[in-house]
View 1 (cartoon, rainbow, N blue to C red):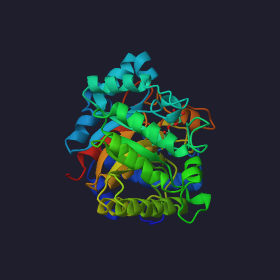
View 2: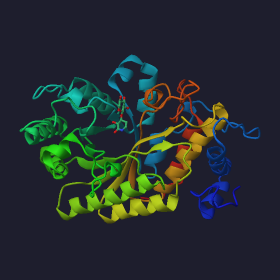
View 3: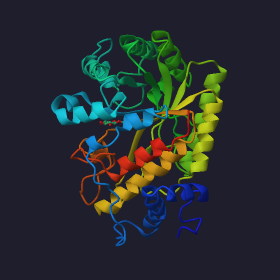
Length: 394
Ligand code: XIL
């Protein structure tokens, strides 16, 4: 299988050799072929020879993810929720130990921050900002302009432009000086909507035209000249037609914004990876990252997790495949010095949006994150540590 180029199209032979030299990673490299095999022969297949790759350490015995990343000048953190930190002190302690940046999973979305026109609510966001500051972590804003989790009035009516600029000025102004970066516009591209510019058909586009994107960034820059302003996008990671079209559209959009001197500083690659997807090519992803870097932008990985919906039920096999997805992705992006920040969307399987959004048909709990639901390390965490340690200098 490893000799068949179709079996593991995402690995170059040199990356495979490099991983084989690295013990545990050698096993994961072999799993690259198994990932491909599984997706070809379907779910539920058993691999009798495959042992769980978990090393038996507790999380406190290991180097924290943020420390391993920081040694290579990479910022590591995760998204979480105020209610989780408030109600689960063990998780909160783990979060503080592992993360150098905190992202509110929902608390800064429009529907929470401004549920009625001009009525702002920063309570939950402030609690998260305080938690971050109290634990020497940076605080990252997500997200100002999106087509989801917005009130029904937002983007509609003659004052749509004022709604947009007021919302951004108030929200960014409130956190000015306390924020590392903002996702200013989220998911503005969707090639399957059929437009020539491949922009997503949203209420903002319909009301304001494509320049709503420019306006959002310009307004955010005015409200906080020090924040890193990010364009955040989903579905960029694979060699599917949709992913390829998205990458082309992102480059076109970012190129236009740079030409028109719109203040955009980084691309956010969400990276909700699909554990059963083998149409991954490290070289193509790196080529894309370099093209973004050539525009003068940083690249953040903003929402990393691995969807295990279509992976085998066996936990050892499943965890190994999830770890392999982390590994091959992080090894690729961390070869590019433009990638400066890695954020997972959650930290432990105890709390993950995928339990609701991508449940398994066998009703087994999903396992998409580096720590399990007992807050202990999984193969994915070891894979992340190895990838961080092997990252190119930056
Ligand atoms: C998700 C949250 O994790 C869920 O709690 C919420 O119910 C829906 O949104 N892309 C994004 C994030 O940019 O804001 C989404 O977060 C996940 C997909």
